[in-house]
Image 1 (cartoon, one colour):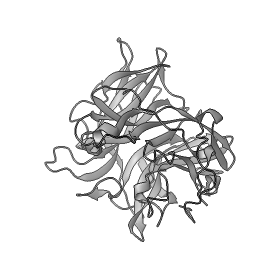
Image 2 (cartoon, one colour):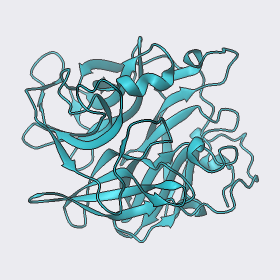
Image 3 (cartoon, helix red, strand yellow):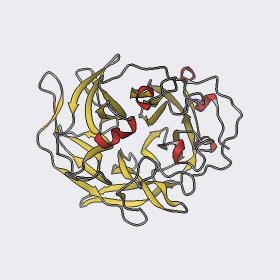
Image 4 (tube, one colour):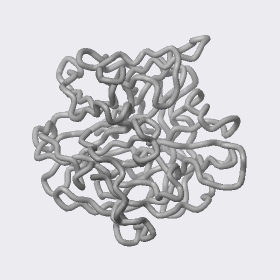
Length: 368
């Protein structure tokens, strides 16, 4: 049974200053070392975000998204510019992914190339791509240098559906995106977790695909989780290993559930003894973090780091303003901290929303 509880309900977010004045930012991810730690240069963490000029309706930002490099210190973010030169991507815009700092000084940037380069009409074609520029730290600010090849790594094949919609919008298109890099400590191999779609009772259903690196490329494996009849999208999948258990997380929006009025936007998760499962829903339902009922759309795109910090962005806040632009946050949300204990999770005590009601059944069965 899915219930609202202080243990899984984020605190209310107040209006928050923008990280990049003049730009919306959303989905964030760190540049990682191969051991999972966040890359640090001159005392600052390196991060990537999606960004677009803060104009027009906020939902249209996806049509102009670029990956941006940021440096993060304890008290502020520093803009380091676009990660790639104009026109480098095989897509018409750049969507979410992950990044790994390699021993040779390069950075593997795994991301989603959305649409096609040079297309006259926007499409929702999605490709999982890697670019491997060099991280240059010799100047006053770090940046990604050199001309890097952007290569498509893996294509969706059965049971996964192609993500090639010509029309659509959030929650209404098939997925093959958000590649999340992971090195399994059990076998040392590199994997990508991918938000995917498989055939379902309602045209398509959300799934978490898994791909494994091989000497000849990336091999697509069976889904880790599917959500037939429950959700169209399992976005930004990633895995954290904690005390020998594999914690699989992804986020999904209430608008892509069959009942948007009773199922919260949130971070969901499963746990298993190994990367390939079998997976068990955390907290009995899979719900790990939800937005507070008073602000059901306040944050999205949660990402759990190996140290159990949780990052997200400020989405829509309530208020008297009539326009979506005035209500859209478009900036980094306050960091939360997750506590994991076998098959249960809670937010750290300082992060809990104690105003959330503890007994309010919301969904009879959420097995994903």
